[in-house]
Image (cartoon, rainbow, N blue to C red; front, side):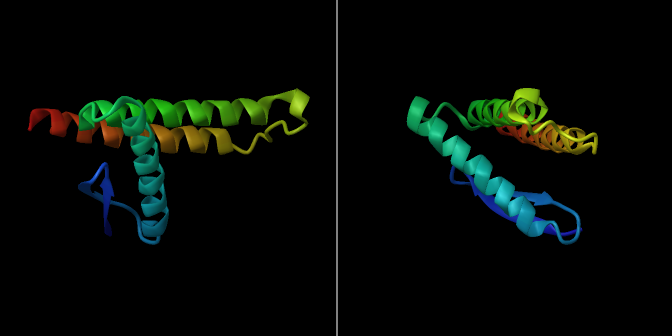
Length: 109
């Protein structure tokens, strides 16, 4: 299983992923880091664990808004029953759980 290394808020992390998912995971990590950097600009260095939780909530809010837009019959872009929403929610939940575990480890150090 491949290991992907990346930085979030200047700290190195290494996460395992499936074969062929390395670039996607790096893109996700970049998105998380950009979200954290916006929070740092707004609230300052509030601690890694707190920043990661805030970033998770911000990303979850972004996903929630995107899903609402897909389901909004007014927009004419009602989501098809393909399970895409469930896949996206499951992926976000998976990453949130991973970030929570990282945050717990960071709090312990």
